[in-house]
Image 1: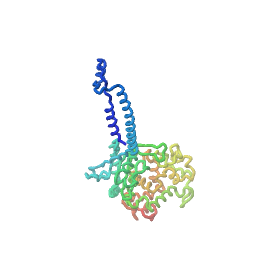
Image 2: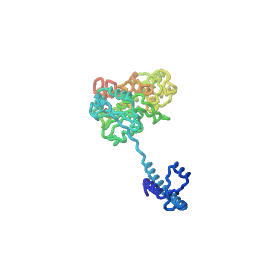
Image 3: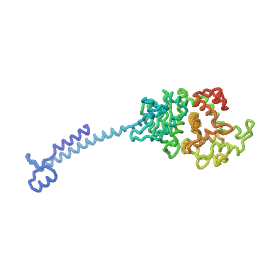
Image 4: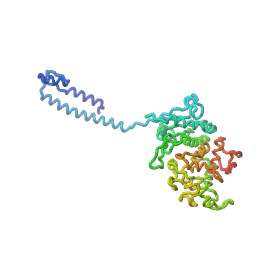
Length: 426
């Protein structure tokens, strides 16, 4: 079958071959009309009659129909080919940040490719995180403790700042060397994501716009409410990987053992019965203890997106006042451990608890109301008789300050924090 260009050429040639000569009209009116119409009068040397012209016109119409049909088929075939192979989205373009600086992660030090910070532009629209927010993100990361930055840099941990999760996935799925490892492109990160490849690559992504689309219905897209806390949480994951890429420290048998113990002792031993020489807590004592831990704070959309149960108050609060829980949380069976499982389920896994405890150890437990106010209060609470997640936090404090597991003695030892001294490998 001829291609579309051949068909068009055939149509034009046929039109030329079958074009009838105009009969001479010698009337002044006809000449004047022809000049106005822009045509040209010719003689009729072949003596062509009107009947001959009619036959030629009829043949011309028949030829045009067949050629146009062929042209239509050719064009339909071409259109189908283009439609069957849709254009692939162009991945974002990521630009190095801090090319002339030397303070991780803005540490290009005038060496191309040496920095550990990147801002990524949408390749089609040019949209990118603003200069001001980019500065906020990376200057915050520069303020991480020196020991932490030393370890992250030694393991070549890189930070990428994207407009959103979808663009991050496009970049990692189509850019070497990350495209070789599916772990970097995922659909569950809300405000950021950190991954370790089998080859040891560690990458932390921060999103300028968060996707709350796993649980919330309808889903939400919101401007990242705290670049600092998002990036510190992701840095906590990266730190666990960097300490030992072949055996991340947030899931060792020793850390998991201490973490599970911490979950249990969120509830005082004498919550419902006498224990260790202490009388059982009264109802008033239980209410005060529970409300001190969970406060009267409303759940944020972020906490709801991370699985927090909305039972209790109108905005998912546990307590009405500092001493009175909502009716849902008054039964003695609603222990602090049980309530924690309802209000912060996402963080009751060892890797997520590690990352959030890392953030709290460095930046404190005071979270903006639209980030993780209840989560961070509970994890970071220093309530008597023992702080929340005491032993998990003790491990983080040792690694952040010493880059080692807790030593046998000294202020960073487990014994100094009242924790089991032989929990297993840390």
